[in-house]
Image 1 (cartoon, rainbow, N blue to C red):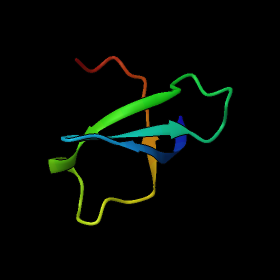
Image 2: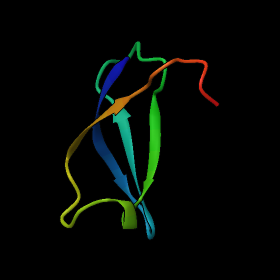
Image 3: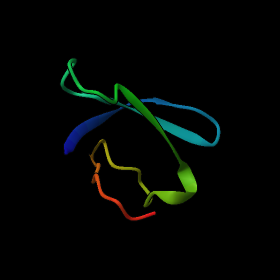
Length: 54
């Protein structure tokens, strides 16, 4: 599953991304600024893979 998300809010240490599709099973996600390139991207793609690997 691929979910396109766009930057919605910037906080001190994180950036909140919101799903572009309002029907998305994942409406928002917070990403630490240290995990993103500088400058932070306006749009990201969240990929969810379902499997038996643990």
